[in-house]
Length: 377
Image (cartoon, rainbow, N blue to C red; front, side):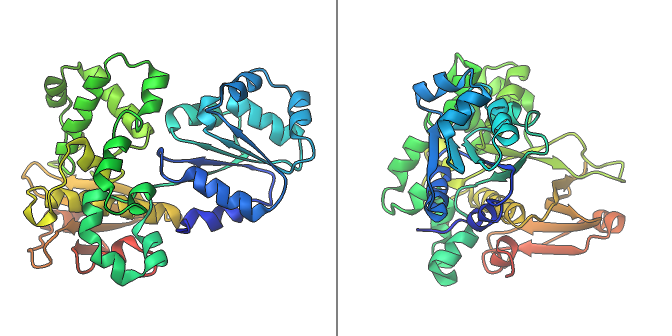
């Protein structure tokens, strides 16, 4: 079994009174991780699954007395697919406040519903963790650095969802299933979207534009959706952990772009499945986009897992000068350019350097990328 970085971090929080909330995309491995933790606990555990209609029904109007009877003497309660349960935040609050000694661990596959139901009732009563698809760092710990570097082109094509990694040779079939409506099941369920075909069309349009600044007007024309609906769908896709946004960096210079944004996918395999393109990297016109998306995802995993609290941006000015990725941390600015070819020329705008005095200006390519995405490299 591939050990997840969050495994130890969650274990460290099992001894206190706060609830543990585990977010993440569908099929990222949340249930597997919960099973691993349950096996480690080696205690009598009560397990509720929010996908079960009877569980949802019984918990709708749960009281502290009812919860006490159901939980009994158990010290651990695991609630999987918690976003499906009405008033889940209030239920967990009742347990934390009224049933001392019971540790709650809840997981959910979408932030737009689970966090709305949990954040206010559980203020000061929870630890939150976000589980991504597998990371390069986790794979190196499992198979070794040499093997992971050998599989780099495979990762750019098929991504790092656990089911994909564990079934080599079946990647396309599994990704087609994963990238279907199952991936955004929560959006269709909770938001009552009447035209999922247009949502898919928007997703395809975004897939073709990874690493580029997006135009809502252009997306509206492409999909036949109005601007407001495009914005709403983008927000929902982000909260379902399918895409994430990068905002422009702007502080001092008049000609900096301030209102644009870029969009990336949480996984390269999902991106390629959405547009059904799995041609070899050597023949791809979009290899630069795939490389940028891959690096953005892996950097995000690494910084989040290791609690490096950073602000993430891109930079561009009206003279068409740009920098792929800006990271701001503790008052320092680091600037990175992503190039698939190690021999590509790297250029950083003098106006940017003079204005912000970045601590790091570096090109990230296939020969040095591990130090960018793996802690301690």
